[in-house]
Amino acid sequence: MNMKAVCPDADWKTAGDRYNVARRAVQIIEAWATEHNLTVDAIAETLVDRVMTIADGIAMHTNPGAPDYDPRTDGFAEGQSFYAFKFRINDAVQILTSVEKRKAAEAKRIAEDAAWAAKGLERCGRCDGAGGRADWPSWQCFECDGRRFVEIDHKN
Image (cartoon, rainbow, N blue to C red; front, top):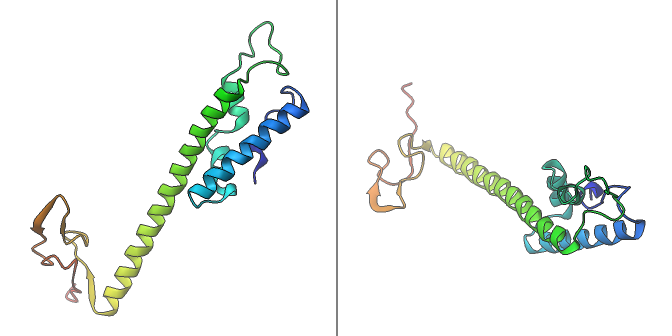
C-alpha cells in the first residue's frame, strides 16, 4: 500500500498520534475496499494521485500562517478529518468503479464485435448496436430491425 495515503507529515504532532491516525485510516480504507470489492492498493494509489491523502486533509484543517501555529498540536480534529477522509475514499471508489465499468463495457463490445465478425456481421452503424431506445420501447432501428447488427458490406 502507498503509505503516503494514510501518513500525516513527519512534523505533525507526536509519533504516537501519527501512528494512531495512520492505523485508523488503513482500517477505513480496508473496510471500503472490502465493501466495494476493490484492493486497498488501488484506493490508496487513487488517493495519492488525486491529492486526497490524510496529510492533505490535515493541511486543509490547519492554518500554518497563524502566529501561534505548531504542527505538533494544531489542525486535526480527529472526527472531522476522518469524516472528510471518508468522503475522499468514496470519491476514490467512484473513480475506480467508473473505470472498471468502462473497461467491462469495452470488453463486452469487443467480444460482441468479434462474435458478429465471425458470422460475417458487424455492429449497426445507424444505432451503434443499440437496436432500439430504452426510453421509447416501441422504437427500433430501421436499418438493423432491432437486431443490433447488419451484414458486412463488402462493396466498399
